[in-house]
Image (cartoon, rainbow, N blue to C red; front, side, top):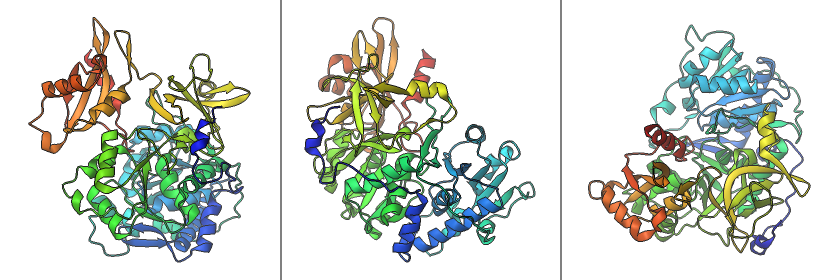
Amino acid sequence: MATRHLEFWPSVPRHLTIPATSLWVNLEVSARRFPDKPAILYYDSALTFAELHREAERLAGFLQSSCGVKRGDRVGVYLQNSPQFIIAYYAILRADAMVVPINPMNLTKEVGHIVSDSGATVVIAAQDQLARVEPLIGHGVAHVIVACYGDYLKAATELDVPGWISAPRQALSDASRAPSTTLWSDALAAAAPLGPHLATADDLCVMPYTSGTTGQPKGCVHRHRQVMFTAVAVPQWNRVYQDETVLAVLPYFHVTGMQNSMNSPIYSGGTIVLLPRWDRAVAAQLIKRYRVTSMSTVPTMIVDLLSSPDLASFDLSSIRWLGGGGAAMPEAIAQKLQDLCGITFIEGYGLSETMAPSHINPPQRPKKQCLGIPLFDTDSRVVNPETMTELAPGEVGEIVTRGPQVFDGYWNNPAANAACFVEIDGHKFFRTGDLGRTDEDGYFFLVDRLKRMINVAGFKVWPAEVEAMLYAHPAIQEAVVIAGKDPRRGETVKAVVVLKPSAKGTIDEPALLRWAKDNMAAYKVPASFELADALPKSATGKILWRVLQEQQDARG
């Protein structure tokens, strides 16, 4: 294991002792320490730590007494970021069960796969998504608890609240008014008895599902100790304390949002300012109004924020930590953020399998377009994918990782587990499937997915590298690079770009091609450019390059 990075370790201990308790205890402790402090600010409506704790216990009682939830059971959470998501998450943990977060954009078939695969018999869903869950009742799903997002809008606000959030509570239809379906408000009002909390650090905690870009989504099994590690490690690393205010804009069903913007502030006692869906104008208002100090995001959100015509009027001066992962922050965008706002974007790296970060940049010495260095007690290496031998700095290989945050494996999927773990030097490492390299300082850099490489007449082209260069073009707002077919060279580089509004109609494909030829090696220059109005994105804001690649392949 290379230790070059230890020279740049932040001013925190190298070892992290995590609490030997369940994640539920974090809320219990914060509710005792800060009972009257807002745990959640939701469009100017506040929910204190004491109230959050009390409502989670009420829902936990209903899960146990009325839904028959037992220790180790799985419960689906099919909600947008909302007070209900946080309450449901911690209620499930209080009931000694396992949270199964479900992407709220999923449709019935996709929800059905997760429910069937996980064995979840209880689903907590929003009223506007009940129609997607109803076909599953009696086919794996035995109980549905139906939430109304508007229930927690207690205070008047001039903020722009989407209609799907402010919609009033709806009565259950005749088709839904079955013993198996209960309104959230009724579940809490039942004041059902609650048994003792039995879950320990080794109990099942949460099972996020992978994106499914290579087949059906797979459940990533995490116990309380694994989730606890990154929930504690992130605030310790970034020196975030109880008086921080966190803007939660990344979806909670994904591990980055779940950990950085929910579990970490609940552990430390910070306040969560909830923004269920990204809206740059409302985000700017919330940052100014509540003096937001911390925010996890993805590059596409920063691109959108910096593209606002009202940027000069935004007051972002309270932010002292802004970071994220999922995709490398283009250097041109990071520099613009620094120049205009005085904010340094701190990049990190993690997967559903590592419960968010395995690497983060040291706050005092970050590098651009860099994954950072391994976290506390984490051993990460770049190895030859065939021989598993560690590679020298600068050489490209697969990133493998072992540490307290690495998952147990995929739920009921021994074949996938056999493929994703490997033994090196007597230790079990997780194969990330990501290609990376280290530099002379031991910092890690992402090159691309293991199979995402374009071979242009024998020259290897890494799409992420070309994308980063394209972002430096003053007219390009977003870019993605895919492979095209070429009878002579095998593959060619194709770029799909979205122009900034001010550049539309003034920049065409030949102009972009000329610029590319002037700014990158000939074999990296895209053979063609396609101008698009928008790029397909996941619910977490990641550009879905595979969708574009599949469309290109279908065209031949």
